[in-house]
Image (cartoon, rainbow over the protein chains, first blue to last red):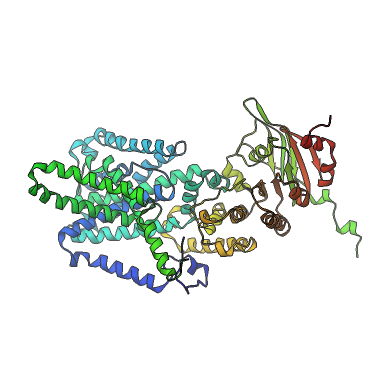
Amino acid sequence: MSMQPAGVFAQSYVRDMAIFRTWKQGAALGFFVLALLLVPTILGPRYVAIANIMLITSVVVLGLQITTGLAGQVNLGQAAFMGMGAYTAAALSSGQQWPFLVTVPLAGLVAALFGAIFGLAAVRIRGFYLALTTIAAQFIFVFAILNLPASWTGAAQGLRVETASVFGFVFNTDNRMYFLILAITAIMTVGAYGIARSRHGRAFVAVRDDDLAAGFTGVNVVRAKATAFFVGAFYAGVGGALWAYYIRFVAVDQFSLFNSVYYMGMVIVGGLGSMAGAFVGVFLIRAAQEILTSVGPSVADIFPALGSSVVFASVNIILGAAIALMLILEPRGVMHRFNILKRAFRLWPYPH
Amino acid sequence: MQPATASQPTVADRVPSPALSAEGLSLSFGGVKALQDVAMELRKSELLAVIGPNGAGKTSLLNCLTGFYRPQQGRVVLDGDKVISGLPTHKIARLGVSRTFQGTHLFTGMTVLDNIMIGRYSHMRTNLAQAFLYVPWTRREEVQHREFVEDIIDFLEITTVRKRVVGELGYGLRKRVDLARALAMEPSVLLMDEPMAGMNLEEKEDLARFILDVREARGIPIVIVEHDMAVVMDIADRIVVLDFGRKISEGTPAEVSGDPVVIKAYLGEAH
């Protein structure tokens, strides 16, 4: 379905493989990055807080996009993998006083190793059964945190986290954290695109589309599945570490099955297999959540009979219904719709 | 000028060991004996056809050669010294045995180009960290293998569809992509499972030409499992005939088509 703008002819394979093939595409990215950099100056603190959460969620959902979107392995344990990373970062930063630049990759690695275990499970089972097995990750996570020594994990009390600092610069405000999170998100995004268009990304999609043929083509299917979980959980772990440094407190209930389901919803709404779709999905669902939670209380004021608990419940009902509708109307996600539109514009005024 | 006998070595001299050989293969599913003590040998740069009536064990034989089935007895040897039976499919593929499928088993969500690039997977070395950073070396490697793949795309005349998603392509083109992916692996042996099935005459002729070109230009020995007698008789160097899991005949097309055992297997016994 891919289609290039008319008149653009690559003269070399490097140009042909480039993500940005025209200067206009590059300029569009430039403006987008500029807009992101200006968010704290233009928008108020409330929006910066929302943007922070959105960016952190994007990292986690990018990971899920790799595991589920590219490699086709259903994963309902992404929040648990995120929690693993968050707790690793929290324990190492407040317990051991390890610096931010060390704890974040370590948090990713710990989560990745935890995730790879479930990747090995994916070798034998798939689809619905794999979904159930990854749900087990959620319970193992809670069980582990509550039963490991409280001096490591804080058990039911949770853990406080030190402020992030890089080379002596302390990220102690929301605005400062915004730039730190943005930088890490940018690195993780570039990495996701790199993996997706490398031999590993192709192997993931091969395993998703036809694991039998993938084996005959020299792809070690067992390893590819475990790697997909490893990478996806690495992203969750890094996202978790950012979460820990941003919220500066971690507790088990921040990483529930509920969150995992929402991450899955974001991937589906954005479009399975599309890295840009991960961001679109996160933005749409998070924005809807924010709007519903801010509108909700005023609705409760107008109709006191509903009560505040009804408002909370209705947020989930409305969002759940939106995701279900999305699955019925456009199961391939917003990005797919966008690509069809883009193609139509490039072809206009010809029908095909 | 030297006499022809001196400059032209005999077949036996040119072929020190077979490209692929199977010895005493037996495979059964419960009570069904799919293969019984089958031996076959694929010589260097030879086009060998495996034929037989329905249920004769042709596809079972192919699946044993590629490691998809594990024969209960016997072994498969590559290049005269590498025993490959018992290895997982991806290891056998990496040793140089590649195959195409009856119907197609392509990666329908990927472009033609990416499908064929998958064939280069085990020839590429970029690890996860290098892919994450997309280091210059990774880019160079991609370009280098892209050039290799483009050669195959040219060869199979699928240049115009290289950026199309395979799911949108017609059957004839898909078969070519399937062949391209197998060739991208730089196989030392190519196995084709009923490549002509479901094609019209023109598509069959095209594919037959490509198969012969592969053998001529690239010197890859080919095993072809096929129902279409006309095609087999035209292009095969030698033919192995299976019936009820046993090898009943072997030889050149002329020898095999005159063999009374083969005629009996196909037409039944005259009463």
